[in-house]
Length: 160
Image (tube, rainbow, N blue to C red; front, side, top):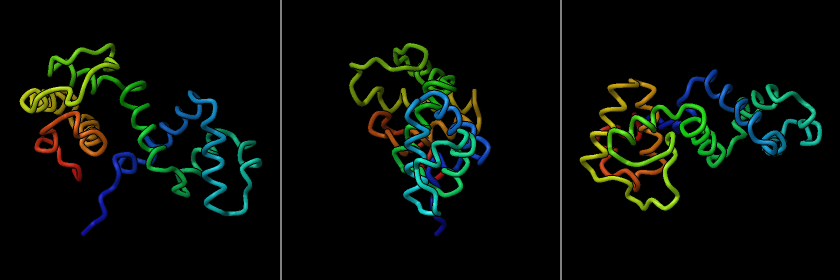
């Protein structure tokens, strides 16, 4: 049986590189964190040396070595779907009638955020409007936050 790639690793390499560069530009501590992750993988470079590298070089090396943790990947996907490309989440929430501000859910909203029928309607709207990119967004929700979106796995399975 083939190993199922995480939603982050299933993105094309160019898209992962772009996303890592966006994180490096947006978050001050990201370069130091990624440098530490690279140094921990071995290869002879110390973190102090790696932080002197360009953000692009640090990002590419982190991806090449597989130095990002599952938590790093999740944070990168949140950056992608909440901050950089909220259109998928906006379509999803609007179709379900879930209140939000530019795709950001209210802090006090309780899980599950919508019922099974609404989730199915929202997922179908995302697929119709955004195709494969929307499918990736929905798969990310299935993998990381299925409890909030009951029934979503019947529309978009985790291994899709």
